[in-house]
Image: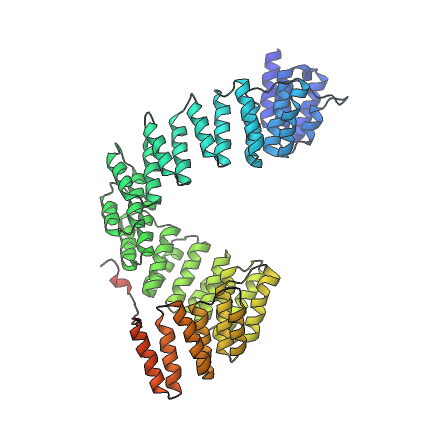
Length: 551
């Protein structure tokens, strides 16, 4: 009879609500089942699983305030504080146990170690480790795993390795975890030692090691392990593709990609994104077309990479096709893909459509707002750029460094001196952002362009950074507006000290002299540029039609 009742109450406790738990409590009291420690312990444990410990604390304390002496109840409380907090009470309960003649058991230590990890408390964690050793619990699997988790989580890999080496039961998952942790911290030598000690490796072991070598650019070791693998899967192939692509060897990466027995979406995305990242935009588009014909359905990562390629190639028609493909296929355009579409239209010259996409986007992040502000500024829609800057704040988005760079860029190119000053001054005052050299550069450019050359010069001299080529170039531009040859020569002296290969400043100086009819000085500026071995890059443009892709 008692077994049936215990089983029935255990079933009720598993699925009960907090209100029903209180009803069960009443049943236990009226039936004297609260004297059954097994039933009461299960009931008390369940009381700690509702996100708060107030009721559990009431149950734990007896009517006369004396704490219950049963280890089960102490473990329940320690477990409850470990999951619900406050974590400090968990440590307090653990420290109180010896005072109540309660000896911690194998169920106590894992939860206390979990709390030490959450609190990043190394001192208490080491103290508990010592108690584990004195109690002889170091060989208990759950405690050993908790110690391992603690030392790994707190960044003490040397101690973690000692715990790992002392563990009796080490399944392959544990070996792989040690490799993964060493790989994540860049300690490839230690990862390889663990790898070499594994009694029997699985695919995860091999792939983790190859991925680690790939991350640090160790192609030779990655290739050596890849060739030795008894069995390869799509992750193995993709890791090697990344290894070669990251090192700049896209030819070998593509050769491996073509040799893959099977590919998944990650394989395709990896190859396409590496083409785009390394400036092989035409190849990225061609591979995307191939993906359409024989690969899986593209996802957001694929669209982002290929839209970036369209932006750089000026391939508006292809970008439009991808956009319409997304809409037709019902693809949920999130912040990342939506921002890529906006940037593609803007860089391809269709700022109106970029703006329409921006307005229609339901979800926007700060990066999306930044791209729209910068795009509008580049296309000369200065007032719209400032409106978007103000609108994003009304929508609850906090501007960041890039927001202010884009907005100040807009002010500079729109001649909005007062707005530029106000926005620059608001960075630290209203948003707690310390202006960087690029922000000072934008303001100096704004002042220089609009006849405030003296103020710009003072700002360049007093700002907390050494002026770079962009700052001196902005001042030189102001000298052209004012025909200030004396300041222009001073600026050029500073530029010469930087030993910059920037041709634009020499061309600008030459043009300043030429506009005033001082042809010998203009010719001298050009000759100096040639003497320094500095050449003006030839401009070029690229427009790609949809019928040219994949051919």
